[in-house]
Amino acid sequence: MIVAQRKPMDEIRGFLDRYSRVLVLGCGGCVTVCNAGGEREVGTLVSVLKLSGISEVEQGTIERQCDAEFFEEIRALGESCEAILSMACGAGVQMAARIFPDKPVFPGLNTQGMALNEGAGEWTEACLGCGDCKLGIFGGVCPMTQCSKSLCNGPCGGSENGKCEVDPETVECGWQKIYDRLARIGRLDVLETVEEPRDWSKTHDGRPRHIIRQDLAEEGFSSNE
Amino acid sequence: MSEAVLKSGSNLERVFAAGHFAVTSELGPPKSADLAIIDKKADYLRGQVDAVNLTDNQTAIVRISSIAAARLLLDRGIEPVIQMTCRDRNRLAQQADILGAYVLGVRNIVCLSGDHQCFGNHPTAKHVFDIDSVQLIKAVKDMRDDGVFMNGDEIRNTKKSDVIAPKMFIGGAANPFGDPFEFRVIRLAKKVAAGVDFIQTQCIYDMDRFERWMVAVRERGLHKKVQIMAGLTPLKSSRMTQYMASNVAGISVPDYYLERMAAAEDGAAEGIQICVEQIKRLRQIEGVSGIHLMAIEWESRVPEILERAGLLPRPVIEVDEEQAPVDNETV
Image (cartoon, rainbow over all chains, first blue to last red; front, side, top):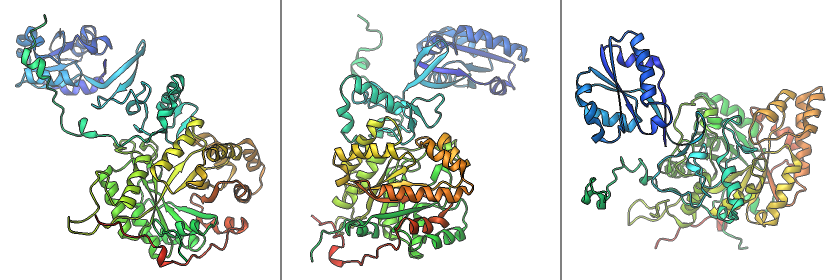
């Protein structure tokens, strides 16, 4: 799931300073699940913004802001406002800006990435979307996200008692986790191999990624039979 | 007399090749453009050690670049070892800097991951880690032995030019005190497989754990494939000892040294005494072929430590032209 956190109120208020009628737009996808940008959080933020002196604050929450089709129901409301505060992840904010090309659109959240839910109110970053998944080698633990330096050939010298030197109080050493997991499944042998340099062209370093599934593109999105 | 051809021809490589117990030290370049600091530290180290490491933005703090400082040491009659981390540059910049360092006369390199930038003076910087230290070792070896860049292209200026490759004596680091302990020897084996020639370890205080690590190193026969230099940082005071024990990740200081340093009237003298004792013990360990003395902002005491440990004078190995590294054959 994509996890995000609300921006500080001062920053949000700063975006909206010059507008008297704004739409706070929630998203029913990931940010609803992580309690950052769903209907409930939109409601709370709207109350705060009204108290802060913006004369008209409208609200709406659509199923997903990363799909254009869900914007139809709030298009007229959005057009009636001077600015839009999107409570979606960074992808949703950009779709909102496309839907309302003549309106200023601001992000209400800081998107943190693809993460695991560790319990109430706690998530761990787990996937960078690197485009070349190596989890099959590393025992199902990702060195890209679980190691502070994204090292692929083992832990640096700063791994101690299962913790990372970056913050031994809170950060676990990803390589300790990889080691423990491979030990459990009896595959420590894979650690003997020198892992080749990564092909970063498969990530954003190659170019802004654009994914085309020819099979779906030809059928069209409506074919669900 | 035909002996094996050297890989780089560096003084450090020749000292090892001649069967000597090698000694390297370290010089942290200044955090300003103050050349006088390099002059002063160079004066302490000249003639006292076989080669001197130049740290590469050590602890993620901006300093004079290791390669520039290396050239300054060459001008001052000291053989440099450049450290190169994977934190600050990608593979293009790293290979360019290896070419540059070579033409400036540098013949030794230590390939490192690099301290995380959160410890330094630019914690908001983006780190790179395009490749890691094991991959960097392999890249430098392939440049030297096969005359190719990481992409496989030959190191020649044009298709008609000769292959002229940088020939470095390649070092790496090992931390016997990091975890998982069992992985530490595997990681050393990977560096050996990647082509490392010598290893400088993290600074050692816990001699028992170091010896256990060396047992595991010998069990795999790694000590016969790589020169292992035991890292040492002399303790200056009881306060520094406490700091190293509790604040530096991957370093453990046993109680017996903490107690000795706490009880000492003259902490500096006691620290040097401990260091000398350590060197004498390390020389007895099979597979330890040198020491790397990291006297942090204490370069002035290096000669005294080495004198008392019986490691002075350093051997002078004449350059034998027949042993000089040969150019890569052009196909």
